[in-house]
Image (cartoon, rainbow over all chains, first blue to last red; front, top):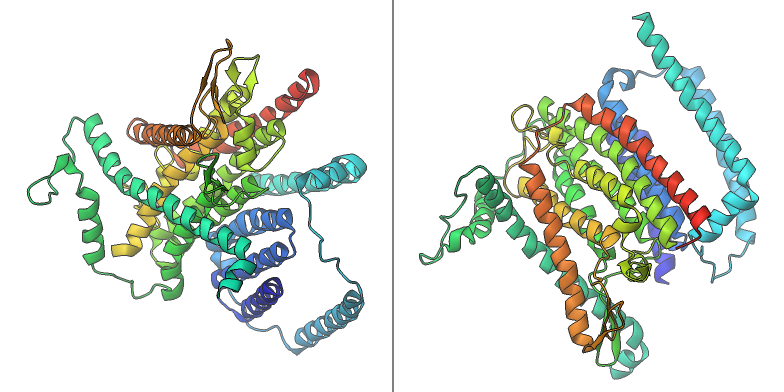
Length: 166
Length: 372
């Protein structure tokens, strides 16, 4: 009972924070609301007894990514300044895209409802996850790290080019 | 009424024990932190050949400044609570909470002793034994960044913003090193629960050296010491404040709002000292002391009462914590401040590769020498 209540509380908070974020015009305040949404999501993971996922959600998203985001926001405020609307065509396009995503979500959610989650599910912890990541899926995992490496090299190359241009 | 108690006995006992432990442990930490504010000023006075605060007195008894923390608290409460006109009111108010709450919550996972038997009930001397305690530590210390940043940003003061930005950049950089140094420990002890790690440190290497973290991971200890000082924003990494140049993120704060930031910094010293003691110096372990008493490597034994053993273990943890708090104070008044680019290149070009090398070496050692 308590777990159900907590689940709906965190879900409601996440949805509310995300909505407020979309309608917030000040970039730093929007970032703070996004932080609230990320933390609520971590709460949902915790209610579903996925402790590792909750911890990683906070460490990676709330701790690292949002901080970099915020530093970027305050270091280059002009780039994030709210611009006036781009005209009706873009608005219609955005609405169409949003309605497509909403339809897809509704479709998925009815399918999800049919799946029953076993009540004694608990993510037993780091060991199982680690043995899966470094055992069965080691190749895919390493492949993924190559993608990240490519992104880092690209970022360094871009800044290096800008520096020589000056 | 009685039936309700009988039916929910387990959960009521658990909640009651947790509440008592939280109150006792946090109360002790708060009291110790108040004394730390005095110790900081006394140590600085000693090192600069001054007397330090010695005038605050009750009925003429000053005890060489022992009442100074109380006088400071009264002064802070009575100061004007000021909010700048252009500040973001809500975030300006929230920032001190963001600084204080994560630090206080972290004490939940620190094991300050093994266990005590109370009326046949085994009372673990740790508020919450999370299986992923180390991840919890990293997650919450990551959230502490927002207190610094929000304080700087919501003040709408350029110097405060500079301090907040410096703080965010510094803390997020050293957080990475902090996390990576702990990986080696997790590999050796095979657990992320702090209580499990402390218990594992009770074993002996070669029959007589306690398997403390500093023995198994000396390299990680030095890296952790540097990274945690930077994380705490103390000299030589206090560019966030830089008293003589930008003052820092709490520039516009006064009264208890400022006191919350200052208190959070001092509590963080205690927390980091406890973490160092727990991770690298055996936590509550006393060398050769086991549940039934001393068992020396030569074969000599000294059986002891259970309560005496528990008291000695809590005492050992306290002594280790006090030692590292003192060390932190000494470092502050010994080293000069870094320049910002020096600090950043120290993190990304020196500490980070060394932390990765430490993981590699630990893995290699464990492969070739076998698991501890």
